[in-house]
Image (cartoon, rainbow, N blue to C red; front, side):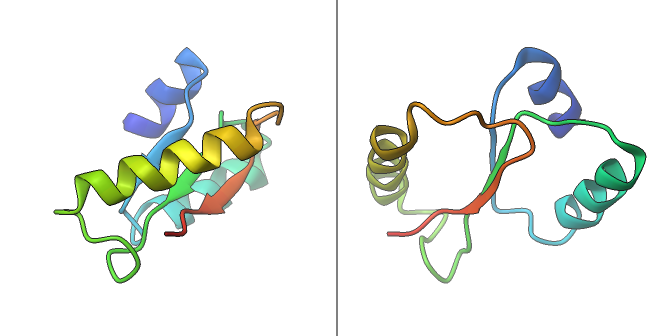
Length: 79
């Protein structure tokens, strides 16, 4: 599972998966299992085909949040 492997490696997961990841995060929270952060991307906000837009938005986010502890943090990426 991507979320589990990202967590093991201390990496924040960036995903368009708004169907299966939220229930998994809920279950993990109920079980007390930590993750290294999740950034959701909504295809209505940034198209999966818009790689440049996604990179630009992620670059801006990283600059704004570089000092944050991403443990159990959940965000939606904005343009």
